Structure formats: C-alpha cells, structure tokens
Image 1 (cartoon, rainbow, N blue to C red):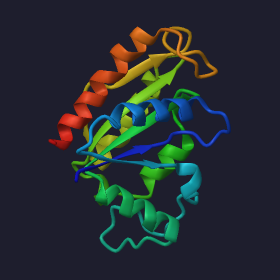
Image 2: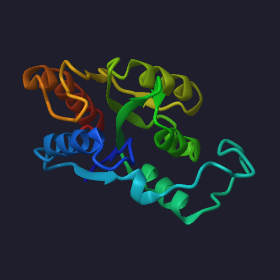
Image 3: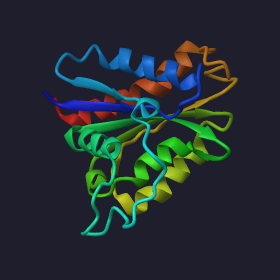
Length: 181
C-alpha cells in the first residue's frame, strides 16, 4: 500500500499546525488505498544539524538514532506533505532542520505543501523552493496557501470553510494523484 507522510511544522503547544495536520489527515483518511502517517517533528526531536559531513557527501553517515528514524520515514514514503507555517518570513526552523539532515532521501520525492500565515505562507514556500534547488524534490502544484484573517484565524479556527476547502483540496488531490493509487 502506498505511504504518504504528513510532516508537522511546529512544535509549539496549541499551534495552528496541529489543527491543519488534523484536517489534512481527515481528508486523506477517505482514501483507503493509502497508508497515512504523521511525522511529528516534536516527537522525533531531531538535534540541530551538526554532522561533520554534509548529507550530500558520499561518506556522510547519519550520526543519531532520531535522524536515522527520520531518514527511514522519508525513504519509505511514496510522497510527503509538509504542513508549513510561516514564521518570520520563512519556513520554521524545525522543518528546515529536518530537511537539512537528509539529501538522497529527497531526490525526486513528491512533496506537497499546505502553508499558512499572514502572507499566505508565500515566504515560507519561497524559502522551501530555494532549499529545493539543492535537494531536488518533486514539488507538487498547487501549493495550498491559507491566509490568516481570510481562511484561518491566528488561533487556528477556520473563518471561511468554503475558501479553505477550495484551497486545500486541490493540493490533497495532487498528492494522491502523485502516489498513483
């Protein structure tokens, strides 16, 4: 059965991300032919990147059990969906750090993004696109970009359900299609 991993983007208690991830997994649960897993970066507790070699180096060896677990999750996934908040005009440090630990695992991996923030998460996506020029995932379109005070409230409640659905569902459809079930 194809596996899709939804990756959290915040470790803050009571974060908007928890609700976004719950909505994504609820939408994906209607596809019986997909195994959906959530990779909670707070639970994984990846250390800040400190390897002596970059992951792109042929001699790179994963130095920590948590990073090996993360590597195994990404390798075993047919696609990844990043639930991506925008913090200070970028993706969150916890998501960036998770990307930094791996290299070969990302090559040509289908990646979908559901992002949000006061600027629709645009700058977080731009940050990801810059990183992606090096790790070479297959970024799926459309990227779902939710805006605070339009589709979402900063407390995570949905303000405009129809608008929210119209933005998120096409991204869900794209990642399901990429898995080719």
